[in-house]
Image (tube, rainbow, N blue to C red; front, top):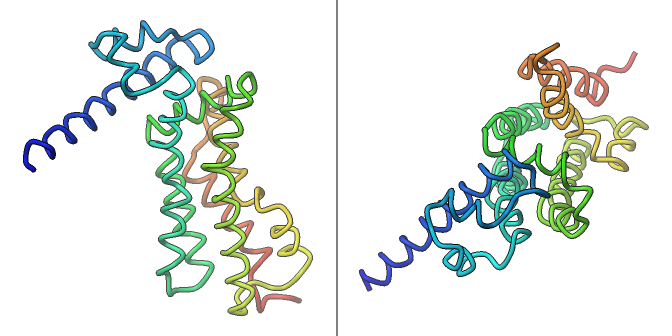
Length: 212
């Protein structure tokens, strides 16, 4: 049993090393131009060993998505399921969590790769949408419905718009990534202040009990 556990740990560690090497190579060369030979070399393994863990380059990118982006909506669901405070504080807590995640170097790099190269690979886009975007949108919808049910969010055209387009809640966090990816050297965005100002603006439009 101990030997089986050790082998499982070694296999998990090797897989993590390969993913780290893939991210280094993809970030340096772009996903489209990256070669599996370079990934294997970066990981310090034979190319044949790489194939024991990942069938092809797309499988490597899918592994990076699972490792770095897919946990975000899962974490959000976990917080939503146990959160007992107001919906406003729930939104603030989740916004803080999301900002912390996208400021993690590996997460930021995977997002940037999706933005830069994703459009060339529709199967990767579909995988990302299924594994990350769909559960993320469901979590946002659940938050808004929770707030309305508790009387903390007004049942108004604004909240109805957010239910129709839950993308609006996390779109500014994509703005953070794209802006600093493009304009960091010219006009860097204060990410914490931007997120705080956005949440203040959002909650001002949704908060119950403040109609004139």
